[in-house]
Length: 352
Image (cartoon, rainbow, N blue to C red):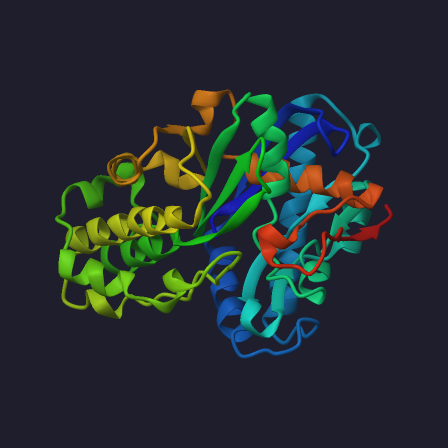
């Protein structure tokens, strides 16, 4: 809910990946508020094609700010639209209900293609869900390519965004991926509500508090953690009510511990202990969270940058990579990553 990460890569959609440039376009407070309104309205929908107010306005504004991000990225890289083959456009998720086969991302691929003059592949989750998958996580196919680049035989990529998800990559076992539980979403919501900030920058609030172990145990006693993978969830699956009455700092500390503890619980589903956990996404900027992960996991923890990768834009890179795979008809998801019945490709192409 904070902005658009845009990344430029050169790839064949298989083993060749070269990161070229990246750019982040922040959302305005007005757009962020509009998106929260859209999330509230989307929660009651059962048809992903519907766009009641304010969803249409939000979709147009989201699309346009993506266009601005693309133009800024190209300017920074010294390139023009004719230099680019395709854009992978994920859009803004406002609803994800895998239990009923429903996911909704705001973003008009045709509008974006016209705006920037580049072919666009969008709606990358729908085909997976149409074939029995949960539509998430999709980045594992890109993590698999990166594991080869960093030369690791058994590694876990942990992406801590609004929701946290992991990908197990091994040289001799099938790719495995699933959402582990909350990422930054609950922490951000708590901090916004109780501290007036959009996030716990540097983990300062959590660092000033104490973990309430009783509340943490209550949070961890959720049916989701007992389900075997593959599995995914919406960022609003968990509630803040168990924290009622807690101070802002203690609540932040407890929720930060909750994110790390849910990752540790999820590790029991891995085929074996990895040699390394590589953390990407915004959560790796929180030193309190990184410390909690180091304490709770039984293998070394590092940031994406420690491995020569770009943690802030790795997800954006992933959807660029998937757009190329979509053009080639290559699979984006697999039975062991989303629960889809067979490996499937996905995405809808809009010509410029």
